[in-house]
Amino acid sequence: MPFLLHLHGYNSSPDSLKVQQTEQWLRQQDLGIELVCPALSPFPCEAIGQIEKILQTRAGRPIGLVGSSMGGFLATWLAQKYQLKAALINPAVRPYRLIERILGPNTNSHTGEQFILEPHHLDEFRSFEVDTLDNPQDFLVLLQTGDEVLDYREAEQKYHDCHLKIEQGGDHGFQHYPRHLPEIIEFLQS
Image (tube, rainbow, N blue to C red; front, top):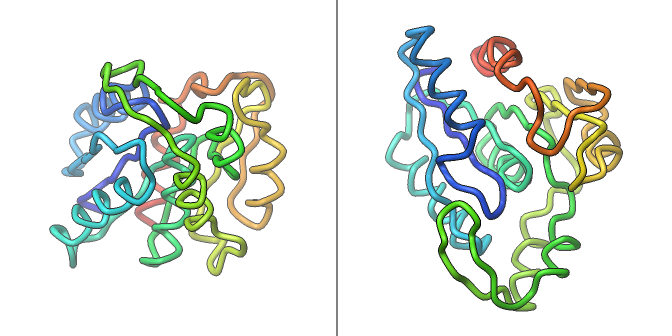
């Protein structure tokens, strides 16, 4: 797998801790894997468009997806559409329920970008929801029960037929993430 596409969480950025940890680990391992993490738009249709452009420019190359929180939601849809393997870290299952609470003006806490979420964005999120996974074996899902943002049980239910690992405690940021990188890369390369 020479190409790893890392999708950060909502209101985050390529400077997130998990992205930095992944980049550092890949560099130390010298596996020849290119890590790409775009600064995703807060608007789902724009974010998917950004990601699909990246996939098109690397067509024909083996690709693995890693998605955290909202990135996990988007990675689920992309993996299903393009028949890719994906590792999901505390993935969002029904993000429109959370987004509904923050409609209106917002600021990305990582980048300072300001944007306005409108009701039609909820419909965009719903349009990328995957009800049934065609290939659950193509998903590695890592959950921590202490996630203070998302209820891990929703992801446990949705991804029950996948390679599912649930750790007690932790948080939304997924504590001790780097120790899972060897397993994530091995899964995506298998």
